[in-house]
Length: 488
Image (cartoon, rainbow, N blue to C red; front, side, top):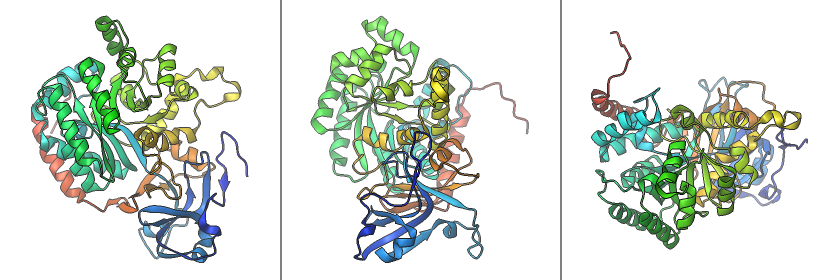
């Protein structure tokens, strides 16, 4: 067995495994795969093992050859057989990877209805000429319901089992996400401008308190506080958010240092950078989840590390909107900052595919760092750390890393199966991160299968798409004209 920074060790036994116990135990099911990537311990792969599940949780990770001697399993799921088009002729070259479900740490799910609504324009025009007018005209409970259904459909089919969302009508989002069977932390939106959802910061906050109380004991849905950004929130609201976060033990989800304009304008108005303003208000802490963080000086990096805030890297959205930078992940990780990954909305990405986001994050990390100064062609951030950003790091930011984020005995069985379509495979972790042809086929949350052989089990996909088509036709009628010529 070779263990180093660039190659994932392939091991055959799991530390702490109950497989050494000679007493037979009952289990609900076991999933067999060529490789299992637990994420914790890091840079490790279990080969020819199976994941054993009982009562929503991971009971064991054991060699498949030992399964019958250790467990009375009600159902053994062999992915090769289950996902074969012809059960009598299983494709022997089909191989699968099991991994923790992805945690998408920055979404605006309902905005999936605005996918492709505005492309190839500046961020200012994207917001002022397209997105904000569209939201003013169309956002309401039905918009959020249908848009969130579309987002959940896409997220599950691409391996996301938990999302950290921020948008209007989070109570509607909660209903939809619960129906689909996912996990979520939903930010109660707070902004100083009146909208269809609330008329004042105080009303936004009051609605947030009601949601916190309602979902405080929910097993999968959590509520956080979502002050939009420094340029849309007053100091008084931030102080109230800080107070409520401490009182209820909830997270704070905000946009921070996303653009050069945001930073320069805040300096003009308050004489401080956005992160400095939040520091002086006492908002910077491990409870804060800061999305984007693309504009950071060395002093900003030091403050980020010292305060313990969590950073969400959204590379594809930053690239599409041209915000003149991406988060310096390599520097943040080097200073011990917890960095996770998010897609942002499908209106600015234009998808919610976390595998694609991981690949982009890995490439951008090498581009944004001065890699030619590193000795021996050393990678900036290795693939196993990139994968951690999409799993256990997100769980840490949300405060649920004792429950999910890695495949460990006693944690909830939130995991995915990925079909390997391209060969050969030398390092399953780097293969998962870098190879774009891998395909998520199966998804489980708390032991319940939400996706089976690429088909959803909890909702009717065709009905969702029908509602999306109907609503998108209303949006299309009001969309500003572009230079596109369509000939029919």
